[in-house]
Length: 261
Image 1 (cartoon, rainbow, N blue to C red):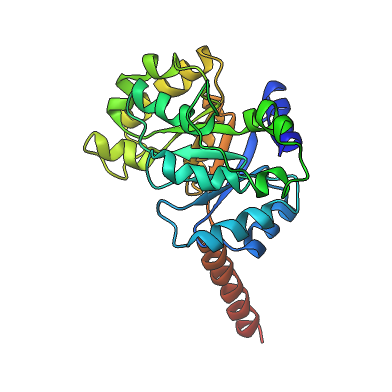
Image 2: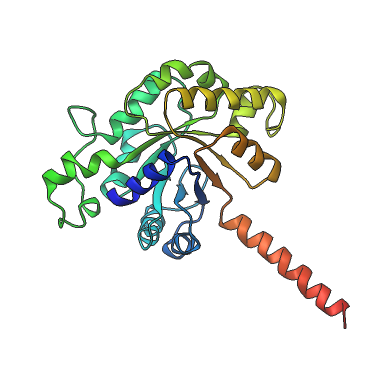
């Protein structure tokens, strides 16, 4: 875990973009393939994804076959949801719908042991089943776990200055669709008002020297916008998109081959 996170930090420090993708189904083979493909990060989605604890664990195990970091988005900003994932070796926890500084402090506390935070003690897989010295894990490795908060509501944008003042936030990820919905423009992520809000998030995060990025479905125009904004982290697409798009492309090629006969 520690070396993987250090690699991500080093890439961002060099001005390089970190690339991630999502899994909504979980399991070890999907994330293993993502790692082999060369992604830096995988977003294991328990908020909108369809997977139980065993599949989430399998997705983490698959991610660990490569240098790819495994970040898990939990369903709500609840320490009880983060705790077992941390104990089983998550590289980071993604907290949805962080609206204000209190929410941000709650997220940080869930991932840090006392006296800094309120994380309950019980690491197992995170210590490689006891192979890692417990005190080394507490004092060093546990502090490498990333706290990633999502800014996906206009209220959070309005409260962003106080959110960014919270110590311990490792990254900010924008959720464009929910953000657009919060201002009555659901799905219209290219609307000037939505773009203005996203620009604000990026500029303020950059000023605060906190890595900032986006979670999105692949769209060339949106991707170009985020590259121009200077996104440090870009999460894009998931296995469903890869499969359906691959199926469509293959079918087109099959039909073209038959038509050429």
